Length: 256
Image 1: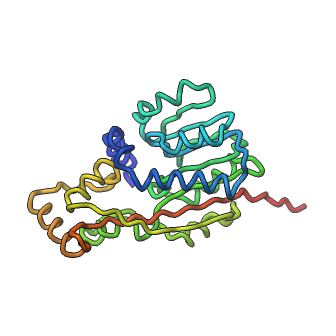
Image 2: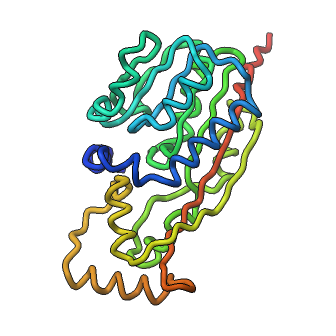
Image 3: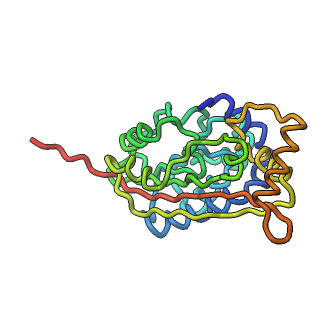
């Protein structure tokens, strides 16, 4: 995974992301609902990795009202999108790769929306989160599953290696008890394949695509997309496959 390229693409999309990322916003709202229903009602110290433009961050701050909220993102430029949050004493922003950062110890909740699919080693990251959490802390996140953007993968042969929900639960099992896990399929309609590409660009999710879109390649893509993924009414679709997981930290047993 080229983290530098990913950061560049998301940085370019920071001004359009909040408007265009409809599915990600819905996912953030559902994630907060799951936290209040399935986890502890009180989180004093929260870390959010992959905060992006702060849609989920604002929900966490206003609904959960933590004593401290540490926001992290791979892109330093995302700080520009958090100007309404950072003047508050309870909120801090630290840029960097979450897979390499040390979060504060005894954190009550480590959480994220629509980020984990960009990680190189989720298993190691889960183990590190276990070390940073308080004894009864939670790790809760949303990511995307194997059907995510299947149209793009079908036509280009390119895409992320998404993990199925059962594989994620297996990676979590040594360190976390799964409290809740769910997946769903969301189909977004677009008028044309070009609108699909514009949507991807404006949400920054083209972060691993390095090929140049020549006129011929673009025409072939649009023709194939229309042929294979049209629906009644003339629209084409783009599939999202959100996964939601809420876990509680396992206590380590020490045998004497």
